[in-house]
Image (tube, rainbow, N blue to C red; front, side):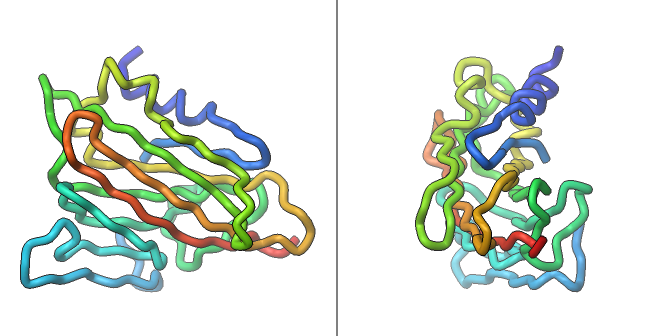
Length: 184
């Protein structure tokens, strides 16, 4: 099986506590969008960031960051039904170190309630690829997903903190976004 298929299968199998997260992989005018611009050519200069995602990048040039639903359609609001996945998609133009056509990335995700109770903490989702790496072209499109499978009554707001980093270089993308669970 090729490394990409293994990568996606691995990511789909991750499940912790009452949340599920995984990795895998447009433009909608209804989505709240901001274009980051800067006179100096920073990592976020001219990046298109949607869905109120707070994003920082170091030594990685970001093109876009946005949220999608489990049907791979752009989210116009940061709302999902219970057990429905939300995908964070980060498109990088440049920045990850390439060795023999491979990039070696790490990714972490922490999902908590807005009150601060951590419901999932995944410190290195890509650990399995530490020695094999991922095809460098595929590493330009990172997708992490979150799914709330159980929630206490009245608990509808969550915060997802994420980090993607280069294990062979200085590149790093980190940030957070909030989403709500639709009322039952």
